[in-house]
Length: 225
Length: 225
DNA sequence: ACCGCGTTATGACAGGCGTCATAGTAGCAA
DNA sequence: TTGCTACTATGACGCCTGTCATAACGCGGT
Image 1 (tube, each protein chain N blue to C red):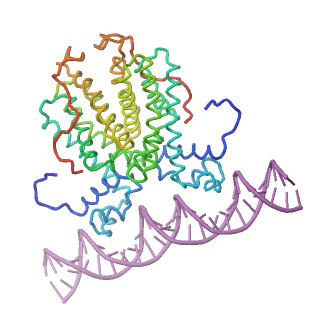
Image 2 (image 1 turned 90 degrees about the vertical axis):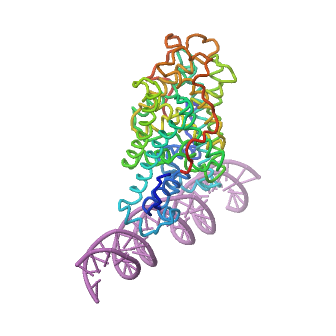
Image 3 (image 1 turned 30 degrees about the horizontal axis):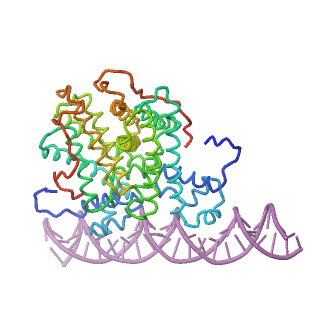
């Protein structure tokens, strides 16, 4: 995104991208090889050329891409925040999903989650790709938290909490076809996250709008996943 | 589970049960009709007899069963808690998964999550079954929270938060093949949940072991899902 | 004996899947 | 031109899926 060069993405990248999209919508079963090529407007014959490892390779690259994308977004979110607090970052992360769901419906979820659900039991390589994707996502989050004053030894745990709550809320939201779960976790988790800053002593009790996190549109970055 | 009557489950129930098990492991694609019958040791010909609605009906019943099972477990957890606090309930819920994963590995996840990931975009009926399953789970949780002193208007939100965080942590745990995410969400969320009790004023700041939640084995109920 | 009904058995069907073999095209290099 | 390489095209293979049609079984009722 915004790679700024005028290059059209090549067929290989488009197929990885399309695979991620289709996985987002209906799991691994919905991402048939023929359908991926069609969705990417790429020649079917290129599949065995670019992905000699077959579907497993394609899926793994799609999952890896998803993790890297999420990680890159975190940095964007941070620099787009008016008041950089942990709760505000979490609100921005969830806000991306809220925006997508309200704008275009609840058709798609997280590709890493789908790959985990469908392949965690079998195939070690895809499971490892999913774990790496979560790590590539949690890393920037934890780093951002430390930058906001959260003690380093706590940042990793809070990053895991944020990602877990977000993934779960995405699931519930898709099932309910309602962003309620997403707004709820943002509202309930915001104060906890903000209170984790080491310089935020004494503001953990109800009051204090200092690190107040709003639930709503974020307008940070693009939602063109 | 402990239905106490000596009746063996009929083939119909066994097939629903087996479908849920297989979905837990590899998503809807891993729950083929023939395989469900084999896993349930039920005659293949009974499938079209008991489930004239085809796979969709079977899956929906499996998802519904999963939701009801989770809801029933909540009541068991509550009555098994030494000190009934919201954080302790959450620890017990996550503890069931920690126990299963440490004992038998990370092969299986939540069937409702898998069904949501695989069918939320298509097929409205399965998506509705998933939403109903989450509701059948969140209801008892919210009720238990109010019984612990959480204001009624907050209990629903906290139940959603608990379920979301748990579902997400299950995902991350399976990807990482490590219960870390589960223990982390329990530890980080416990104080927040306990502080939500209306009679818990002033104990939200670091100290107070009153509602301390331990992460670890729970030994509450069976894990025979 | 006979019927009726709930249940099971079995095989076939069409369709989709991932994979592969094989041939073909385009473009650059010498 | 010739040759080499990167990429594309196409059809077929075997396998598995969900579904259906059809027949048979078992057993209680009368």
